[in-house]
Image 1: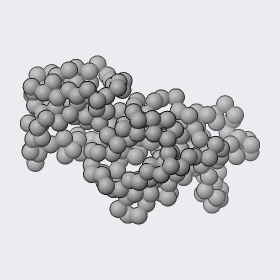
Image 2: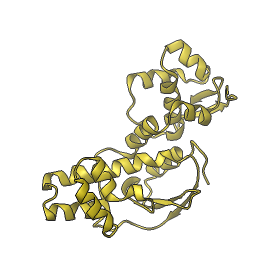
Image 3: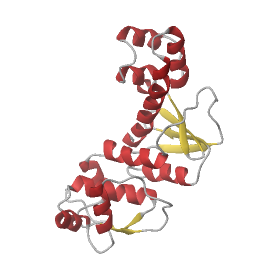
Length: 234
């Protein structure tokens, strides 16, 4: 099982250990989402959730019409790559749009994994079919950092990291850090084990949400660890 804030660390561990296989994530409502990895990098997300169907992502990206969406919705479930290939054959999307389309949908599917606040996980030695695999332009490290930025708001980050008096210090487990913004780099430098999260916010003038997400990115990737967990203010 995992609780809120632990899934990013689990996925970072899979990336750093260069795991190949399928990580099935189960939710309390019975839905499952399976992330297929090769050498630690995502190549496919298979899901029982309607929101993960290929046509959902293609519609959000503006690559198919509402009529084509309804037609695909009524048809068989296909992976993003297979669905996009069919659309190219039908002339619904251009050949040069194929790879950006499938990469964009898989990227959003990976980022959306970090929306889950709790559930179960199970690893299986299973590979994605060659016709379904997608190679992304960005590494898993960069994707997970972006997922923390997009999917965890300030309220949720405080819940995960504790209160203003929580103290985060450096760790040496990370092989390398994901790309960070200048503000995030400054926040990380101040998270040196001598200051609380509140101290870092007050000393730097950086928004609390930026300091919090930097702390979670660093802890999840192994670049930092929680030294003392403060009590939530609320």
